Length: 167
Ligand SMILES: Nc1ccn([C@H]2C[C@H](O)[C@@H](COP(=O)(O)OP(=O)(O)OP(=O)(O)O)O2)c(=O)n1
Image (cartoon, rainbow, N blue to C red; front, side):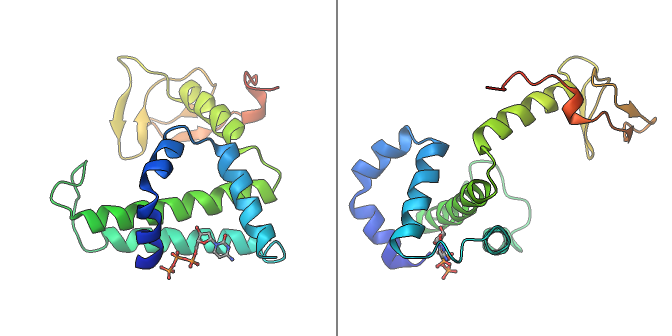
């Protein structure tokens, strides 16, 4: 996103900040749908095109961290323009993800809640759970079988787990 866009967004910062505090995925979905329709860009927003655009934005996001070495949480020492740029690239990734989900007929919020639920069942919290390069090693109640290193060797089908967020 270029500097002009950033400055224009900054001019309306108060209203934008107030709106952002309560933003929902549904609002973003509608705004992206309006954005595409008003420009007659719906023809370009195919799932494949959106996926490629999303990956491109992930690349732009990665460039911000490229060659920096490990970056502490909170990004201490970063200049304001750097964190603003980071926000723009994160937003691009989110917006394309929201639009891609919409064009695929996937309710992203619902899917995310369901996945969090699946994650919690796969990696239950507790004393037996410790972080590792592979995520977390711990016994689970999903029925997944793990080897001695904690790697899953047989996965229980996600659709076998009762959905609690179904409408
Ligand atoms: N066909 C398009 C093109 C853009 N956008 C929207 C979604 C993204 O939020 C943003 C991406 O715009 P750019 O392709 O101009 O990418 P950047 O903003 O990252 O600019 P640049 O690549 O010049 O840094 O605009 C869109 O919905 N559909």
